[in-house]
Length: 155
Image (cartoon, rainbow, N blue to C red; front, side):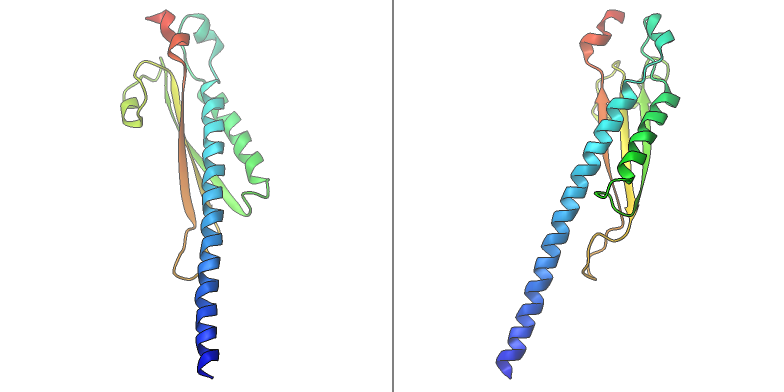
């Protein structure tokens, strides 16, 4: 009987380790998906330039167009089975000739170059099956900055 109890205890511990390892693997994959999505949204938003201001020599990111394209990407991602039953929300910070460049150093961006910092937050069911680990919300941030050679004609 003692051998059976020890066997059950070891089986429970090993199954817990296996479940935790599988959940951590799913968490790492979800982090990568969120990072790719944040990078896509940041790039798409940064390329949503106001053509009228650009024709006058200024790089101004059209906030409305940037929000529209990023919302489209987020809605498309939420419909995929990879994200499951979760809600994706976003935040965007724009640095351009109209809004200014103050604060871009805190994101590690070069001053004077148009850029977008995009944050995607996933909120949903718990990713971990074990009772001692719980994660319902996490986020990833990506930044897209124009190439300096594309904006150097203004300086």
